[in-house]
Image (cartoon, rainbow, N blue to C red):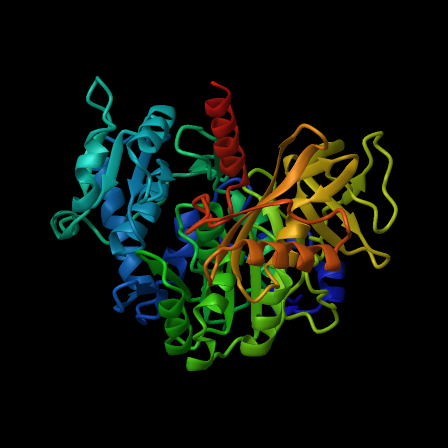
Length: 525
C-alpha cells in the first residue's frame, strides 16, 4: 500500500487520507511517540544531509545537518538530566534560529520536558508575563538578551537563566551523542503562546507529542510538502506557523527546511530563495507583500513548484505579483494555533483549481460551514460566521466568511473587524484589499471609528510611497468607492509611517482601535 506522501492529487487526498494512514508515516505509535526522534534522530544516518538552512539577515548562510542537530540534542538531553530536570518541567528558550535553538528544542523534548519557544523581540513586560504563566525551570537565551531574561526572574530565583553560547555547546559535548526518549504519545511536548499585544497574555496552547501526527494533514495538503522538496518558511519558529509548519512538519518527512534569522528583509529573503534553489515556500501574507513592495523581484531567479501562505488573505495586487514573478499560484491555508489548519488549497494537486483569494476547501476529515446568527447555513455569496464541526457540535472560529457555488470558502474578516455604518455592513479586509491595488498604497489598515450621525465610519491608516495630501485622500476615496460601492470607502484617511503589527506580521487592527479609543478619551477629558 502506498504512503500518503506518494499521493499528490486532490482526489487521492479524499480517497486515502485518514488517521491510520497518517500514523504509517512515523516510527512511533499511539502509545509511544517522540517529536525529536521523528523529526531529527531517525533521519540522522551519518550522511551529513542538510536539515535546516538558515538565511541570516547579515547575509550569512548557515546549514545544519540532521547528524549535527541529533548529536547536540542528545547531549543537551543528557545535560538536562544532569541538572535534575524532570518530566513535565518547562524549558523556555528565547533564541533566533541557530544550532543552540534546535539543540534546545529537540533535546528538551527527548527528556520529557516541555519546550517553550519565546519570541526574541519580546519586551520585558511580555517576557515576564509568559515566564510567570508557564513557570519554566530554565530560560535559555543569548548574551544579548541575558539581562532582559534576568529581569523576568521571579522572587524565588526561578527560572535559572542560561546563555546559549559556544561555552554551553562545549560543556554538553562531555555527554553521549545518543539518547533514548522518555515520552508517550500523549505527554506534553510544547507550550505555544499565540501572538498578542505586550500587556495581553494569550493562553498557552499545550501540544502533546502526538500533535505531530495530526499536523501532517496541514503539511501534506496545506503546504504540499513531499520528500524531495527544498522547503523554506521565513516565519519565526517562536510562532505556530514557523514552528509547526516551517520546522517540525518538513523535518518529520526528512525534508530539508529553511528559515530566516534576524531582522526580516524581503530582498535578503529573495536572495536566499534563489541561492538555496527553494521549490516550496510557506510564508505569511506580509512576507509576499513586502517582497512585492521592494521592487526587486526581477533581480532573482525562482524555482518554485508550490507556494502557500497563512495569517490573513493576500490582496489581489500582491497575488498578481506572485503570479508574474513566481509563476505558480499562492495557496491560502487557514487555521489557528488552537484549532490547527482546517481549510487548504492542496498545493501541487493538478486536479484542484486554486481560486485567487479563496481559503480553499476543508482538510480531509474536517467539516466547516458558514452560519447566520440563527444557526442556519448561509447561501453562496452570503456572509456569515465560519463554523467548525468538532466534538459533536459546531464551534465558532470567530471569523466571518462566505462560500461560492463550488464550495470554496472566502475570508471576510474577524467578527470584530466588521464595520456597520448607517446600517451598511462593510468588511475591513475588503476595503483594505481594494485600497492596496492603488499604486501609491504600500500598506493599509482599516477600522471603524465612532460617528455621531452614522454610528461608525470607515477610517483607513495608509503607508504611502508619496506624501499624504487632501488630493491623494480624495483619489483613494474615489478609487475605493468606484470598485466596491458608493457607501463603501474610507471617510477618514490618516497617513502613517508604519502600521502596528502582531509578531506574526498581521496588521494589528485591535491596536489601531485601541489607539483611536485612547485619543477619543483624551479629547473628552
